[in-house]
Length: 121
Length: 222
Image (tube, rainbow over all chains, first blue to last red; front, top):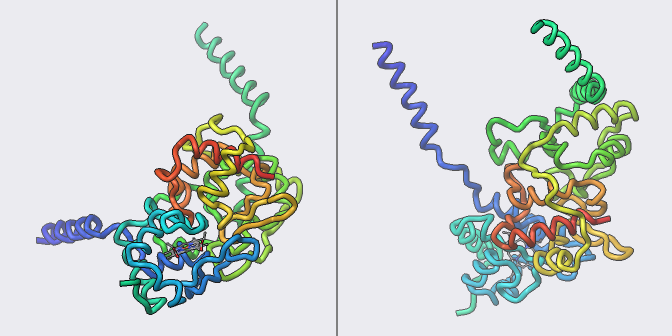
Protein backbone atom coordinates (compact mmCIF):
# COMPACT_ATOMS: atom_id res chain seq x y z
CA UNK A 1 0.00 0.00 0.00
CA UNK A 2 2.76 2.36 1.09
CA UNK A 3 4.60 1.55 -2.14
CA UNK A 4 1.58 2.31 -4.26
CA UNK A 5 1.22 5.73 -2.63
CA UNK A 6 4.86 6.42 -3.18
CA UNK A 7 4.62 5.63 -6.87
CA UNK A 8 1.52 7.75 -7.23
CA UNK A 9 3.25 10.73 -5.61
CA UNK A 10 6.31 10.32 -7.82
CA UNK A 11 4.13 10.04 -10.93
CA UNK A 12 2.19 13.18 -10.03
CA UNK A 13 5.42 15.03 -9.50
CA UNK A 14 6.80 13.95 -12.88
CA UNK A 15 3.55 14.81 -14.64
CA UNK A 16 3.68 18.23 -12.98
CA UNK A 17 7.16 18.81 -14.31
CA UNK A 18 6.19 17.81 -17.83
CA UNK A 19 2.99 19.79 -17.92
CA UNK A 20 4.40 23.09 -16.65
CA UNK A 21 4.17 25.35 -19.69
CA UNK A 22 7.30 27.03 -21.01
CA UNK A 23 7.53 30.24 -19.06
CA UNK A 24 5.93 33.09 -20.92
CA UNK A 25 6.10 36.70 -19.82
CA UNK A 26 2.99 38.78 -19.28
CA UNK A 27 2.36 41.62 -21.71
CA UNK A 28 3.31 44.16 -19.04
CA UNK A 29 6.61 42.34 -18.41
CA UNK A 30 7.31 42.26 -22.13
CA UNK A 31 6.58 45.96 -22.48
CA UNK A 32 8.81 46.91 -19.55
CA UNK A 33 11.64 44.64 -20.65
CA UNK A 34 11.63 45.24 -24.41
CA UNK A 35 9.90 48.55 -25.10
CA UNK A 36 10.32 50.71 -21.99
CA UNK A 37 14.09 51.22 -22.45
CA UNK A 38 13.09 53.54 -25.31
CA UNK A 39 9.40 54.25 -24.89
CA UNK A 40 9.54 54.70 -21.11
CA UNK A 41 7.99 52.80 -18.22
CA UNK A 42 4.66 54.56 -18.71
CA UNK A 43 4.98 54.71 -22.47
CA UNK A 44 5.53 58.46 -22.71
CA UNK A 45 8.52 58.12 -25.04
CA UNK A 46 10.98 59.00 -22.31
CA UNK A 47 13.03 55.86 -21.60
CA UNK A 48 16.78 56.04 -20.93
CA UNK A 49 17.54 55.56 -24.63
CA UNK A 50 15.64 58.74 -25.54
CA UNK A 51 18.78 60.86 -25.18
CA UNK A 52 19.21 64.28 -26.81
CA UNK A 53 21.81 62.74 -29.16
CA UNK A 54 19.25 60.48 -30.88
CA UNK A 55 18.01 61.60 -34.32
CA UNK A 56 14.35 60.89 -33.47
CA UNK A 57 12.37 60.45 -30.27
CA UNK A 58 10.55 57.20 -29.50
CA UNK A 59 6.80 57.44 -30.07
CA UNK A 60 4.76 58.56 -27.07
CA UNK A 61 2.43 55.58 -26.78
CA UNK A 62 -0.01 57.64 -24.75
CA UNK A 63 -0.48 60.17 -27.52
CA UNK A 64 -3.97 59.72 -28.94
CA UNK A 65 -3.08 61.97 -31.83
CA UNK A 66 -0.05 59.95 -32.98
CA UNK A 67 -1.28 56.48 -32.14
CA UNK A 68 -4.71 56.83 -33.75
CA UNK A 69 -2.96 57.29 -37.11
CA UNK A 70 -1.92 53.63 -36.94
CA UNK A 71 -4.20 50.72 -37.73
CA UNK A 72 -3.96 47.57 -35.60
CA UNK A 73 -2.15 45.93 -38.51
CA UNK A 74 0.31 48.86 -38.73
CA UNK A 75 1.18 48.40 -35.06
CA UNK A 76 1.65 44.66 -35.46
CA UNK A 77 3.80 45.21 -38.56
CA UNK A 78 6.03 47.83 -36.97
CA UNK A 79 6.64 45.62 -33.92
CA UNK A 80 7.41 42.65 -36.17
CA UNK A 81 9.49 44.28 -38.86
CA UNK A 82 10.72 47.47 -37.20
CA UNK A 83 10.64 51.07 -38.37
CA UNK A 84 11.00 50.20 -42.03
CA UNK A 85 7.51 48.60 -41.95
CA UNK A 86 5.77 51.95 -41.45
CA UNK A 87 8.43 54.10 -43.07
CA UNK A 88 9.81 55.50 -39.81
CA UNK A 89 13.32 55.36 -38.37
CA UNK A 90 15.05 51.97 -38.01
CA UNK A 91 15.71 53.01 -34.44
CA UNK A 92 12.44 51.18 -33.86
CA UNK A 93 13.70 47.55 -33.87
CA UNK A 94 12.09 44.43 -35.40
CA UNK A 95 10.85 41.78 -32.95
CA UNK A 96 9.60 39.07 -35.30
CA UNK A 97 12.27 36.61 -34.15
CA UNK A 98 12.25 37.70 -30.51
CA UNK A 99 8.57 37.73 -29.59
CA UNK A 100 5.85 35.29 -30.61
CA UNK A 101 2.90 36.30 -32.80
CA UNK A 102 0.69 36.06 -29.71
CA UNK A 103 2.96 38.32 -27.64
CA UNK A 104 3.02 40.88 -30.45
CA UNK A 105 -0.78 40.96 -30.68
CA UNK A 106 -0.95 41.33 -26.88
CA UNK A 107 1.44 44.28 -27.10
CA UNK A 108 -0.77 45.86 -29.76
CA UNK A 109 -3.73 45.60 -27.36
CA UNK A 110 -1.59 47.01 -24.55
CA UNK A 111 -0.65 50.03 -26.72
CA UNK A 112 -4.32 50.61 -27.46
CA UNK A 113 -4.97 50.75 -23.72
CA UNK A 114 -2.13 53.21 -23.23
CA UNK A 115 -3.40 55.58 -25.92
CA UNK A 116 -7.07 54.96 -25.21
CA UNK A 117 -7.55 55.11 -28.94
CA UNK A 118 -8.40 53.15 -32.04
CA UNK A 119 -6.94 53.19 -35.53
CA UNK A 120 -8.45 54.91 -38.58
CA UNK A 121 -11.61 53.20 -39.88
CA UNK B 1 62.97 -1.59 -18.60
CA UNK B 2 59.31 -0.63 -18.79
CA UNK B 3 59.45 0.81 -15.30
CA UNK B 4 62.44 2.91 -16.27
CA UNK B 5 60.51 4.33 -19.21
CA UNK B 6 57.58 5.12 -16.94
CA UNK B 7 59.77 7.02 -14.52
CA UNK B 8 61.44 8.98 -17.29
CA UNK B 9 58.15 9.88 -18.91
CA UNK B 10 56.57 10.99 -15.62
CA UNK B 11 59.55 13.20 -14.89
CA UNK B 12 59.27 14.64 -18.38
CA UNK B 13 55.55 15.31 -18.02
CA UNK B 14 56.04 17.03 -14.67
CA UNK B 15 58.88 19.05 -16.14
CA UNK B 16 56.83 20.17 -19.13
CA UNK B 17 53.97 21.11 -16.82
CA UNK B 18 56.24 23.23 -14.63
CA UNK B 19 58.02 24.80 -17.57
CA UNK B 20 54.93 25.81 -19.50
CA UNK B 21 51.81 26.33 -17.55
CA UNK B 22 52.14 26.01 -13.84
CA UNK B 23 52.63 29.68 -13.06
CA UNK B 24 49.47 30.44 -15.00
CA UNK B 25 47.72 27.62 -13.17
CA UNK B 26 48.83 29.02 -9.82
CA UNK B 27 47.41 32.40 -10.92
CA UNK B 28 44.13 30.75 -11.82
CA UNK B 29 43.86 29.09 -8.41
CA UNK B 30 44.83 32.25 -6.59
CA UNK B 31 42.33 34.20 -8.69
CA UNK B 32 39.58 31.72 -7.96
CA UNK B 33 40.25 32.09 -4.23
CA UNK B 34 40.31 35.90 -4.41
CA UNK B 35 37.13 35.95 -6.46
CA UNK B 36 35.26 34.29 -3.59
CA UNK B 37 37.11 36.13 -0.83
CA UNK B 38 36.41 39.56 -2.34
CA UNK B 39 32.71 38.77 -2.63
CA UNK B 40 32.59 38.81 -6.44
CA UNK B 41 30.33 35.75 -6.39
CA UNK B 42 27.58 37.83 -4.80
CA UNK B 43 26.89 39.46 -8.17
CA UNK B 44 28.56 37.21 -10.76
CA UNK B 45 28.11 33.57 -11.75
CA UNK B 46 31.22 31.64 -12.74
CA UNK B 47 29.51 28.43 -13.78
CA UNK B 48 26.83 27.91 -16.34
CA UNK B 49 23.66 27.54 -14.26
CA UNK B 50 22.27 24.00 -14.41
CA UNK B 51 18.76 25.44 -14.67
CA UNK B 52 17.89 28.68 -16.41
CA UNK B 53 16.59 31.21 -13.87
CA UNK B 54 12.99 32.34 -14.13
CA UNK B 55 12.47 35.88 -15.43
CA UNK B 56 11.82 37.14 -11.89
CA UNK B 57 14.97 35.50 -10.58
CA UNK B 58 16.93 36.92 -13.49
CA UNK B 59 15.77 40.48 -12.79
CA UNK B 60 17.21 40.21 -9.29
CA UNK B 61 20.72 39.43 -10.56
CA UNK B 62 23.12 42.24 -9.77
CA UNK B 63 25.89 41.74 -12.29
CA UNK B 64 26.59 40.07 -15.62
CA UNK B 65 27.41 36.36 -15.76
CA UNK B 66 31.13 35.66 -15.98
CA UNK B 67 31.17 31.93 -16.67
CA UNK B 68 32.29 32.73 -20.24
CA UNK B 69 34.45 35.74 -19.30
CA UNK B 70 37.54 34.21 -20.88
CA UNK B 71 35.79 33.96 -24.23
CA UNK B 72 34.20 37.39 -23.98
CA UNK B 73 36.83 39.79 -22.70
CA UNK B 74 40.31 40.67 -23.78
CA UNK B 75 42.80 39.82 -21.10
CA UNK B 76 44.64 43.14 -21.16
CA UNK B 77 41.32 44.95 -20.75
CA UNK B 78 40.35 42.78 -17.75
CA UNK B 79 43.69 43.43 -16.08
CA UNK B 80 43.30 47.21 -16.38
CA UNK B 81 39.59 47.36 -15.68
CA UNK B 82 39.78 45.32 -12.48
CA UNK B 83 42.19 47.92 -11.09
CA UNK B 84 40.24 50.96 -12.26
CA UNK B 85 36.67 49.90 -13.00
CA UNK B 86 34.62 52.39 -15.00
CA UNK B 87 30.98 51.68 -15.84
CA UNK B 88 30.47 49.55 -18.94
CA UNK B 89 26.72 49.96 -18.60
CA UNK B 90 25.45 53.53 -18.23
CA UNK B 91 22.44 52.18 -16.29
CA UNK B 92 22.53 49.97 -13.19
CA UNK B 93 22.47 46.27 -14.10
CA UNK B 94 18.93 45.20 -15.03
CA UNK B 95 17.50 48.64 -14.41
CA UNK B 96 16.12 51.30 -16.70
CA UNK B 97 15.42 53.66 -13.81
CA UNK B 98 18.73 53.98 -12.02
CA UNK B 99 22.06 55.08 -13.36
CA UNK B 100 25.04 52.83 -12.78
CA UNK B 101 26.25 53.88 -9.33
CA UNK B 102 29.85 53.42 -10.55
CA UNK B 103 30.82 51.76 -7.30
CA UNK B 104 32.42 48.56 -8.57
CA UNK B 105 35.16 47.46 -6.15
CA UNK B 106 38.73 47.73 -7.44
CA UNK B 107 41.60 45.28 -6.99
CA UNK B 108 45.29 46.03 -6.57
CA UNK B 109 47.78 45.07 -9.27
CA UNK B 110 48.64 41.63 -7.94
CA UNK B 111 45.06 40.70 -7.22
CA UNK B 112 43.96 41.91 -10.64
CA UNK B 113 46.66 39.77 -12.24
CA UNK B 114 45.42 36.60 -10.51
CA UNK B 115 41.72 37.31 -11.06
CA UNK B 116 42.44 38.06 -14.73
CA UNK B 117 44.09 34.64 -15.08
CA UNK B 118 41.10 33.05 -13.40
CA UNK B 119 38.51 34.86 -15.52
CA UNK B 120 40.50 34.17 -18.68
CA UNK B 121 40.29 30.47 -17.84
CA UNK B 122 36.47 30.57 -17.94
CA UNK B 123 35.84 29.84 -21.58
CA UNK B 124 33.18 28.17 -23.70
CA UNK B 125 33.72 26.30 -26.92
CA UNK B 126 30.60 28.01 -28.26
CA UNK B 127 32.92 30.87 -29.21
CA UNK B 128 34.83 29.59 -32.24
CA UNK B 129 38.15 31.30 -32.72
CA UNK B 130 39.52 33.14 -35.70
CA UNK B 131 36.23 33.87 -37.47
CA UNK B 132 36.01 37.64 -37.01
CA UNK B 133 38.73 40.19 -37.64
CA UNK B 134 38.25 43.74 -36.35
CA UNK B 135 37.57 45.91 -39.39
CA UNK B 136 36.04 49.35 -39.77
CA UNK B 137 34.11 48.77 -42.99
CA UNK B 138 31.52 50.91 -44.73
CA UNK B 139 29.25 47.86 -44.92
CA UNK B 140 29.62 47.39 -41.18
CA UNK B 141 28.71 50.99 -40.55
CA UNK B 142 25.63 50.80 -42.76
CA UNK B 143 24.38 47.70 -40.93
CA UNK B 144 25.12 49.24 -37.53
CA UNK B 145 23.71 52.69 -38.17
CA UNK B 146 21.12 52.37 -40.92
CA UNK B 147 19.86 48.83 -41.08
CA UNK B 148 19.68 48.01 -37.37
CA UNK B 149 20.19 51.29 -35.56
CA UNK B 150 22.29 49.63 -32.81
CA UNK B 151 23.09 53.04 -31.31
CA UNK B 152 19.44 53.13 -30.22
CA UNK B 153 20.57 51.31 -27.08
CA UNK B 154 24.39 51.52 -27.17
CA UNK B 155 26.70 54.49 -26.83
CA UNK B 156 29.19 54.89 -29.67
CA UNK B 157 31.83 57.39 -30.67
CA UNK B 158 30.84 59.55 -33.63
CA UNK B 159 33.68 61.88 -34.53
CA UNK B 160 34.44 63.73 -31.36
CA UNK B 161 31.05 63.12 -29.78
CA UNK B 162 29.61 60.15 -27.91
CA UNK B 163 26.05 59.46 -29.05
CA UNK B 164 23.35 56.86 -28.57
CA UNK B 165 21.13 55.19 -25.99
CA UNK B 166 21.88 54.16 -22.44
CA UNK B 167 20.10 50.85 -21.82
CA UNK B 168 22.77 48.57 -23.31
CA UNK B 169 26.47 48.28 -22.53
CA UNK B 170 28.56 51.05 -24.07
CA UNK B 171 30.35 50.22 -27.32
CA UNK B 172 32.81 53.05 -26.86
CA UNK B 173 36.09 51.17 -26.60
CA UNK B 174 34.41 47.86 -27.50
CA UNK B 175 37.47 46.89 -29.53
CA UNK B 176 39.66 47.07 -26.46
CA UNK B 177 37.17 45.19 -24.31
CA UNK B 178 35.62 42.43 -26.40
CA UNK B 179 36.86 39.37 -28.23
CA UNK B 180 35.69 39.80 -31.88
CA UNK B 181 34.64 36.14 -32.07
CA UNK B 182 32.51 36.52 -28.94
CA UNK B 183 30.57 39.39 -30.53
CA UNK B 184 29.70 37.13 -33.45
CA UNK B 185 28.81 34.17 -31.20
CA UNK B 186 26.61 36.46 -29.10
CA UNK B 187 24.76 37.83 -32.13
CA UNK B 188 24.22 34.27 -33.39
CA UNK B 189 22.73 32.98 -30.13
CA UNK B 190 22.51 35.53 -27.36
CA UNK B 191 20.35 33.32 -25.15
CA UNK B 192 23.12 30.77 -24.88
CA UNK B 193 25.04 33.39 -22.95
CA UNK B 194 22.27 35.15 -21.12
CA UNK B 195 18.80 33.73 -20.57
CA UNK B 196 16.99 37.07 -21.02
CA UNK B 197 18.09 40.20 -22.82
CA UNK B 198 16.19 43.19 -24.17
CA UNK B 199 18.32 43.03 -27.28
CA UNK B 200 16.23 41.74 -30.21
CA UNK B 201 17.28 38.52 -31.92
CA UNK B 202 18.78 39.51 -35.27
CA UNK B 203 19.28 36.01 -36.67
CA UNK B 204 17.08 35.88 -39.77
CA UNK B 205 16.98 39.68 -39.97
CA UNK B 206 20.56 40.08 -41.11
CA UNK B 207 22.46 37.31 -42.89
CA UNK B 208 25.33 35.36 -41.42
CA UNK B 209 27.77 37.29 -43.59
CA UNK B 210 26.33 40.59 -42.43
CA UNK B 211 26.71 39.45 -38.83
CA UNK B 212 30.39 38.77 -39.36
CA UNK B 213 30.89 42.16 -40.96
CA UNK B 214 28.93 43.79 -38.13
CA UNK B 215 30.95 41.93 -35.46
CA UNK B 216 34.17 43.07 -37.11
CA UNK B 217 32.87 46.63 -37.16
CA UNK B 218 31.98 46.58 -33.45
CA UNK B 219 35.30 44.88 -32.65
CA UNK B 220 37.08 47.85 -34.24
CA UNK B 221 35.27 50.46 -32.14
CA UNK B 222 37.46 52.86 -30.25
